[in-house]
Image (cartoon, rainbow, N blue to C red):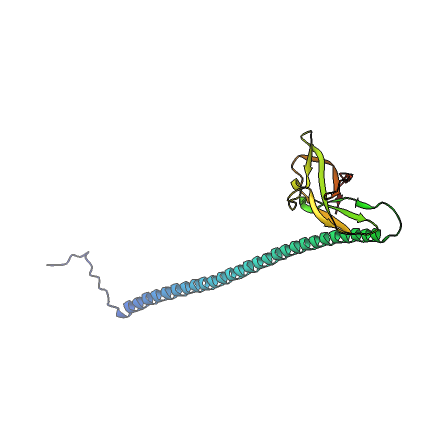
Length: 239
């Protein structure tokens, strides 16, 4: 077999060093890529860990602030309730002291009247009637003094009758003390008297009832004389 004139034979020389360099460059590129990826991944992971720790700390701080605010609110609410309770107790104490003061003043006037010298009427007498509205719609406190004047005082049994005159639904209606004061079981009231008797209590008016006057009657048990009677217009003072 013969070669034609145009055919050329190409001879390539074998270069093992070059292929080794290419392989090393390829391995180096792979290593650099892996190192770069690892470095970037480690950086992202570190930042994520740091961010996670920071967020966890912020959450703990917010929870602590929430607990502190809740505690402050509870303290303020408790203080407000205590102040309100204290003010209510002080108000009740002042009201009680005012009532006691009024009672003492009235008793003092009564004793002065009993110790006064001179003439005047003798027998059973009905002192002034006082009516005072209790707070918070608790009723009307009443007080009247029944006393005995005589040259020689001795204990006597008397009867006291109290009636309230007024209107309900436009109709005149008279109510006894046993219908108005829960502590009075029956009317008239039987008591023993030597110097004086203080008639007092709390009236609870029926709904829709319009009082006009109170009538107080007193007489000795078994006596034939007419009862002593006084009628007082309805006038309620504020405490």
